[in-house]
Image (cartoon, rainbow, N blue to C red; front, side, top):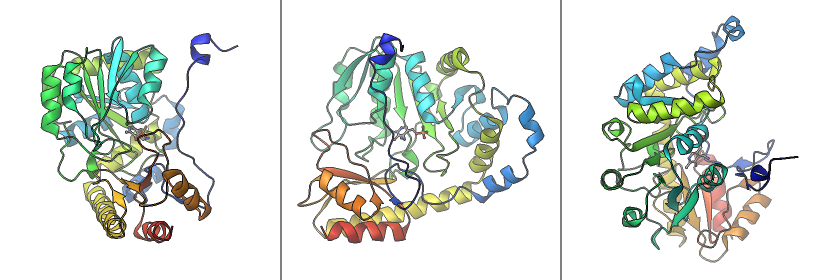
Length: 346
Ligand code: PMP
């Protein structure tokens, strides 16, 4: 028998992971392989080390990420994917009620239900931008904003987030899963430690092409990071395995490969958006590695179904404000040409 409070939950449902046969544009994975230095680091990994528990503090990886972000090791918390960092962040930093957008990452309401927090749903503006004044007016137990937002792909100016964090008393968690694909918006990771209530969460799943590794991290002041460590050490002290620490360390050191693959995705994104817009379809200006697209005559559900028939997998969100759209991960040029050709023939 499942405990009643758990039986009553509606867990998150991740995008489909079919065995093969699809052009897979549905879960915002990176179409390029991880850095070759990841393969090399795993090739020379001494499996004898697997006999022992891994470093529970991931010291080498923490130091490398701290150097990259321009902060101190005490400002970094690592987790088993950013989903776990978010889950611990909600637990450690929020109280009673959490405010977030009506159209955003659908894991946020799940964490609220798990921890028994009231959900304060603040609608995005009609153009899908965030109304930050609404957050300032709401009683504050916690605020979570995906920046850039998913699935709408827009980002909020980082100065607006700083103003918001300064004007509220509760903690503000900014989920920057897609920030490396933003055109102008900057990550707040390097400045987050200067604020008492701002936590930035990032991931290796998208821009580092390591979704299968499960590695994410938070950047914030030492007190917030201590809160996350307290929660972690109430669940599981060894959230990052030794292979994960080794692979992520190699990836974060290879800045040239990172920049090259991110740039490639940005140019493919622009090329695809231009082709769809030229044909009269709506494409929200994207700051992420996906496009939020509305066909001029076919519904989102229909577009999803027709693409699937042609072995192209995208994501459709059936809620009223998103039903007209599909979310399309930016793949390789060839994958996006196949998608565009199919979409333009509807
Ligand atoms: N935040 C957002 C907004 C996402 O879309 C995702 C990917 N589903 C995540 C966090 C989680 O990514 P991961 O757990 O792979 O780091």
